[in-house]
Image 1: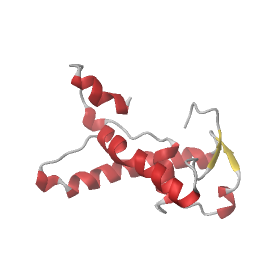
Image 2: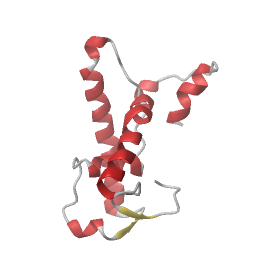
Image 3: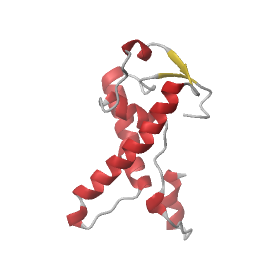
Length: 125
């Protein structure tokens, strides 16, 4: 939904409360945080194991992703406040974290797969 807001608004559909939208706790955003070293696993062997989407590790990773992407958005907006720029969450996600997550994954692991292996049919991440 985040990536559809701006195109839909160009056609006159209005969205309210965009400033309170949350990040998406999906593997591109979460992967960015792991690949950049902002999130690390205490047990390095967990990078090689496949985890169920409801496992404690994956639930905690998703929760941290929500909180940390919000902090990234706040820091971006703080950096640009003198320029009178204030980005919404959808702008931060679409313009930065998703593409950065994919680029860093390809650079670091030569794949766009998540850095933490997930047993999933794609409906959660």
